[in-house]
Image 1 (cartoon, rainbow, N blue to C red):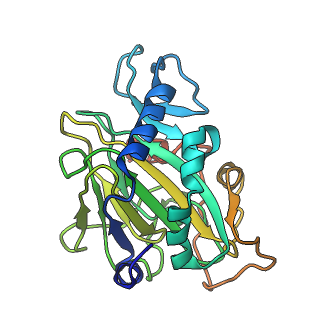
Image 2 (tube, helix red, strand yellow; image 1 turned 120 degrees about the vertical axis):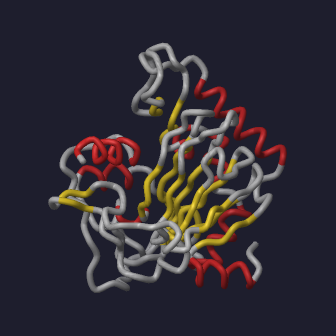
Length: 283
């Protein structure tokens, strides 16, 4: 459970760090499942519907960049996403009626792990209100060298930053962001640390320049009365994995914004990495 001080920090800053959220045994279990799922996959031969490989490796390279929807496909992660301790914390933020939204594991292998540019999660999946949280669980000890999360605090209550150019959604902030001027904060932590972050909080991470891996489990939850604003096939892909995890489904949508940018995709993309890479190449 959160302390009152932690809830105040989340509401004020747009994030809160919860050290040692995952215990040693649970952490080992989640790590072992990643090893099992990743084993035997190569860049040339893998299930592209379940995972994404690091692009800068040989065809027989085995470095995985992302595992899609682990809480849908793999039981240890499904069980964790419905655990009482986790849902109790989310309920403290949004109330008793909760939907699980999506999940992913970002791997960042040593000396190669891909950069993630500044973005706000809600830009990808507009909702009728902002009661949506992204929770990042460090599965390895994580610091600046191996690509820890960095956030811009106190920006989550402002309007969404621009994520588009030439009328198309680019999956990243397209206005100028200076880390120093924005008071960006590096969030380091040991394995098992959880970071609860508003879906409106701008965040990014650098490449993994160390000789240590950096695996991060990311889960998203939202209030049951935060309904998706349909944006075509990309909305369908995300919403396919949502499910009620506590309380009751809402019979009415709650609207808290008078307007919100709708992402217009130039074509279908596999992931944030894919979309941001295309944007860099076109630029």
